Length: 232
Ligand code: CTP
Ligand code: MG
Image 1 (spheres, rainbow, N blue to C red):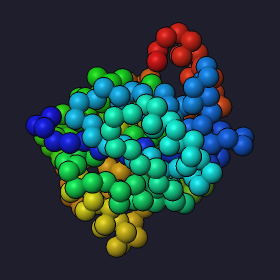
Image 2 (tube, rainbow, N blue to C red):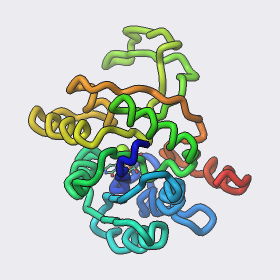
Image 3 (cartoon, rainbow, N blue to C red):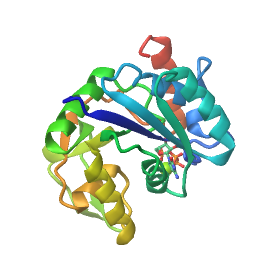
C-alpha cells in the first residue's frame, strides 16, 4: 500500500428506521456482541491502519469509546457526533482525521460480514486509481421508474452493480469532494457519488453478497444464522 497511512471512518449514527425498535442497528447484538464491534473487528489486521473515527448519536458516545478501546487498543481512535444524514455524519468524522493520512476508507457500521481480503483489494485499487468501491453485479434486473411507478427504462443488467462499502479514496480527493458537495448543497447516497461529481476516478472491486447491509428485520435473522455457521 505504498506506506500510506489509512484512516477508517465508520458511520454509526443512523436511527435504523427500516428495522424499527429502540436500539439503533450498530448497537444490536448478534450472539452477545454489538454489530459495531463485529464490523470494526474486520479491520483489526488491515495493513497501514493508523486511525479510526466513528460517528454516532450523542447517547452512544461513551459505549462507542469503550468498543473502540477494546478493538483497537494501539491506534488513535475518535468518536464524533453524527448528523442528520449519513453524509453529515461522515463530514463530521472527516474533520477529525490527522494530516498523516493518505487514504481514507469509509465503511458502514452495519456490514459486519465484509471479508478482510476484499478490504485489502479495495485499498490496493484505491491507492492506484484514486477511489475504489466494493460492489457486486446486479442479480435482479434494475428498472428506472417515474413518480407513479411507471417504468421509464431498463438499463442493461450487465453494466449494473450494487455499490457496498468499504469505499476507499485518496484523502485529498475525498476531502475535496465533501467540500464541493457542501458548497453546492449536493447530497449523495454514497461517498463515491460525491467524488464522481468532481470528476474523480473511482473503480469497482468485485466483492461478495455476504457483505450485505443489515437494513430490514430479515437481514438481522440472516446475520444471526451466518454468525452461527461461523462466518465471523
Ligand atoms: N448513518 C449515520 N448517520 C446518519 C444516517 C446513517 O451515521 N444520519 C449510518 C448508519 O448508522 C449505518 C450507515 O450509515 O451504519 C448506513 O445507513 P443505513 O443502513 O441507511 O442506516 P440507518 O440510516 O440507521 O437506517 P434507516 O435508513 O433504515 O433509518
Ligand atoms: Mg439510512
